[in-house]
Each structure stands twice: as structure tokens, then as C-alpha cells.
Image 1 (tube, rainbow, N blue to C red):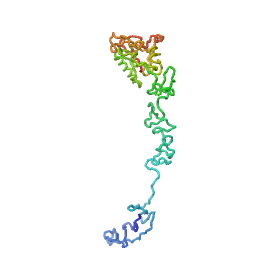
Image 2: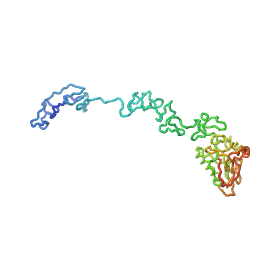
Image 3: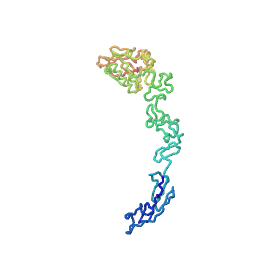
Image 4: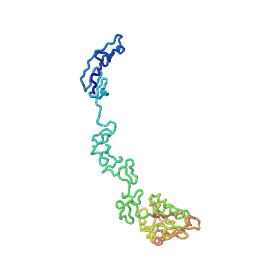
Length: 382
């Protein structure tokens, strides 16, 4: 509400004397005379300035009196002053339709406001299929959003070119099962043929999780003294350690093809109905029966890391039918005394002796040695 009957009036009386105030009809300040209120530098009595009769005309613009500018706004609420007073200045509207603090509060209005990298409007901005995101920033690889038609994936700061099953720095799928390449923890990868009965000649089917539909066999990359194996159980542990270090996820399922007085393959191995394969996927037997009757053909000659080891002796202590070879097991693989002996097999036939190697099943039983000798182990997945 406007306050009636009173208007602020400012008068400039010169450089040495200025008197201002609200005047009554009598001309006294506040209706009384205050002899000590004069600001005059003279020693005579104070002289009241001429009274200017205030106007009651309403104005929405500035009222200029002397050197001061007074803005009067009608309709100001009681208790609020809507007047802004400045010296030698005029008022100006400083409002703006855009954000000025780097925020994106106007994102989606189709106007490129401060803080925005783009703005295609509410209909055009999208975190899925637009070139401008809902945050009004250009869609780019690494922003954690998958731009359909341009990116296969986007893990933001976790994009990695070497991470198996991850997303590359180009926002394309990283190494993964079913891409047709053997990588990471995979045993096999036949691409679109995974999970089907289709597989390469001489190989085996590959599952949807890139594992052979078969049991893996390998010859140990390490050498062990026969008398220091710690029995068949100790030999099993060595195979499991090698399988674990090589990245086989079923490393605890491996056993050494070796016999002692408490354990032998014929009695303690799973008689598998699925094939046996080398780590590179080459089939060596169709099942347990084929493995024992005909042997692994062409032999177990690859290590856990698929490195070839041709013509190496392997501790077995086992007959051709998978049972204990009596008196040739280094006292349960714990003695290196000269009188104690151990039976060995042979990883691969000598040149020109393939038929004999097959017929005599020399892969499992070929020679006898003292237990201080260091040879390898066959490791078979169960």
C-alpha cells in the first residue's frame, strides 16, 4: 500500500550547506524548532530553507531533484521500501533467461545455455539414441551411457582394452566367450557353433561358456623325483597346482595318472563317457574305455600351457589296464633308496616305432628307473 501525504524530497543547496527533512506547514522540522540542528557555518541564527510544496502525482519512473535520483514504485506492500536511491546513476534490468553459473537448469529448452555442450530440446535429448544426452552434453565413448547404433557398451572409466568380458576404450565388446577367439579363461571358442554338435575335425564340442565338452589331459611342465612325490595323493596335489597356475577353473578336479598301494586310476578315476582332449582341443580318446584299451592317441605330449614335450619319461607305477605295477612305485613314492624302483611311461613314440608304442601301450608302461630320477606326471581332469 502507498503511504499518502508524504513524499521524500531532496534539495541541493550548494557545497557548504545542505538541509533536508520532512516539513510541517509551520516550516519547523518535525513541527519543532531545534536551535542546535543547523548545519550552517555562520554564527547567526539558523535560517529555514524555502519550503517546496510536495506533489501528489504518482510516477512509475525516476523523480530527479537536484543531484539525487529517486525511484518511486506504486503498489509496494506496507513495511517494504521499493525505492532505490543512487547518486548520478540510473536503474537497469540485469535479469537473464539463461543460467550464468555453469549449471544446466535450462537443459532441454533447445537453446545452448551456459554450461551446456549441446541441447536438442526435450524430444531430441536422449541417453540412449540421441547425439545429445539428457544432461545436455555430447554423447561420447566413456560417458557411461550406451549410444545405440554407435556403441556396443560403455563402462565409463572402467573401459579397458585388455579386460576379459569387459568393454574397450572404443566402446566395443572386449574379449569374451562366443567371439570365435580363445582368450582369457576359455578352453575353447567356436563362435556361433558353441553349444552345438558342430566342432573341428579331431576336436570336441565347445559349450556356451567356452569349455570343452570333454576332460583335459596334460603332461606336467615340471620334473619330480619319484621318491619325493608323497604318494598318489601328493602327486594329485602337484597336478592341481599346475592346473590352477595355468588358469583351469576346475583345477581341483585334476588327478595324477599314477598308482600306489592305496590308489590307482582303474579304481579311483571317473570312468568318463565324454572325450579326453589335450589343452589345445585335440581329441586323444572318445571316453574312458577308449582311453584304457587304445591309449591316448597320439599321446599326452602337451603341458598345461600347451607347450610340446616330445619323448619324455613320466612316473606312473601303473600297468596298461590302469592298476598298480607291483614293486615299482618307489615305496608309495616316498623312497629314493637305490633298491627302490618306479615304473614310467613315455609321452610320444620314437621315430619309426609308433606301432610298437601303440601295441605295447608304452604311453603308460615302458621303462623302470631308480626313484632319485626326475621325471614328469600325467594329469587328467575328472
